[in-house]
Length: 185
Ligand code: AMP
Image (cartoon, rainbow, N blue to C red):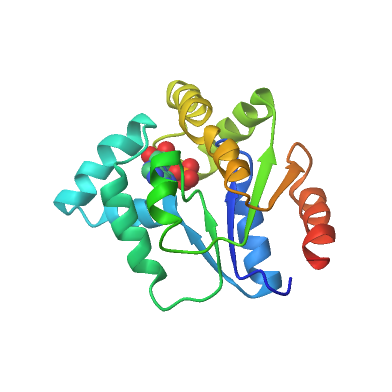
C-alpha cells in the first residue's frame, strides 16, 4: 500500500464499513477514524452540541456539516495516515473536506438492502444502538441513497481512485478480497 496514506471507506448502513476499517487499520497500521463513533462520543458528553447531534443521529439524519467537519477535522490534526469511516458523507461535505485533506483511495462496499437490514437488526440486539430500530434503519437507507450514494459519482468526476468491493459475504471473505487489491497498490 505504498503511496496510499489516506483512505475513505463508504457504503450503506450495515455494509460493514466499520468492521473492514478496523481490520485495515490493524493490518496496515493506520488510524481508524469513524465519524459515527466520534459523534456518538460527543453526544455522551451531554454538551449543547452533543444534544443537537443526538437529535439528528437518533432519527437517522445526517448531522450538519459545520458541526461534523469541525469535530472530525480536529481529530485528524497531526495525523498522517488514516482510514476515514463514513466521512465525508455527502457531496457538500466532501467539497469542503477534500480541499483540506488529500484522500488517496476510496473503498466502496456494495451490499443489497435485504442483507443490510438483516445485519442491522442483528446488531441492534447485540449493541443496542438507538438508531438500529426498523423505522430508523429504513430512513438511514433512504438517506444513504439520496445523499451518500451521489458521492460516488462525484469521486469519479473528480478522478479519485475507487475500489468497488462486494460486501455481501462474511467479514473475512470481504477483507481477503480487499487485501488482494490493497497489497498491489
Ligand atoms: P454511522 O456510525 O456511520 O452509521 O453513523 C451514525 C450516524 O452518525 C448517522 O446516521 C448520522 O446521523 C451521523 N453521522 C456519521 N457520520 C456522519 C457524517 N460524516 N456527516 C453527518 N452525519 C454523520
